[in-house]
Amino acid sequence: MTVHSKCYMQCHRCTRVWSQSRLRAGIHRMTESNNNDHLVKSDDSQHPANLIPELCKKFWTLGWVTGTGGGASIRDDDLVYLAPSGVQKELMKPEDIYVLELSKQLDPKQRIYLRSPPSLKPSQCTPLFIAAFTKRGAGCCIHTHSQWAVLVTLLLESQSNKNLFEINNIEQIKGFGKGYQKQGALGYHDTLRIPVIENTPHEEDLTESLEVAMDKYPDTYAVLVRRHGVYVWGETVHKAKTQCESLDYLFQLAVEMKKLGLPWLSDIA
Ligand SMILES: [Zn+2]
Image (tube, rainbow, N blue to C red; front, side):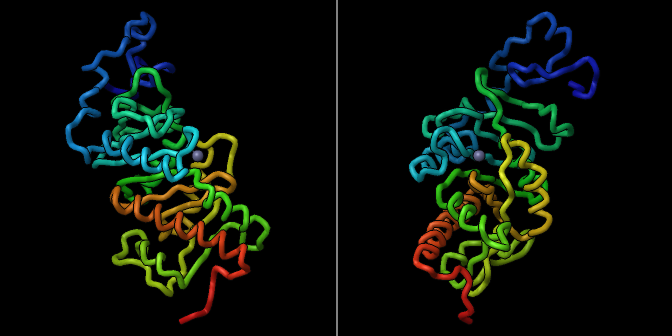
């Protein structure tokens, strides 16, 4: 199918691209074969379509994806697997997962899905996940609405350097890589820096400022969104998950330190 051809367009209901004649005739009913349902069926527990619901179930227990907020996406080479919009994340199933080909996403306004769940909508987080895959070569991106992340952005709001969270001399900082295309992890004395961007009424409108923050802080593995949450990515699912956990630990610690009047940066060396 040539997606650039004027003969084809996207269906607003199922989000897939069909020939205009089929759309007009209303005969583009999804079948198992033309919806590529095989892409989300596997007995392998590590398959992205199985892993995303499993991870989201764990994240829900941590309060990261409460009330359908947040989400996760995994890239396997050129295939990207995405949690949908508006589902209860702890009840999500492999058949709820969207799949797209990264190299085919030439127009952000007309996203082309290889596989779409019949009665769900694509997540507004999709362009942000795609930014982590295309700009950083990430293998997994996690978005949480963690209260600790939100509180850190609120604490920063009244500070002069309100667009940057910094912390050093805490053991858990060693849970982060040194940065994009760099070997090794940060050390205990290193300063972890996470940029903060302002929230927007529609999540997809965060994409531009997220990309600007990635360019300004090329070694970051996360971007905080003020009064909203955090996006965290990694080269693998394992790295994205453990960095997300380490970050949440540090955010919680930072909130408690602030309550006790303790500084996030210290000059121990
Ligand atoms: Zn969100």
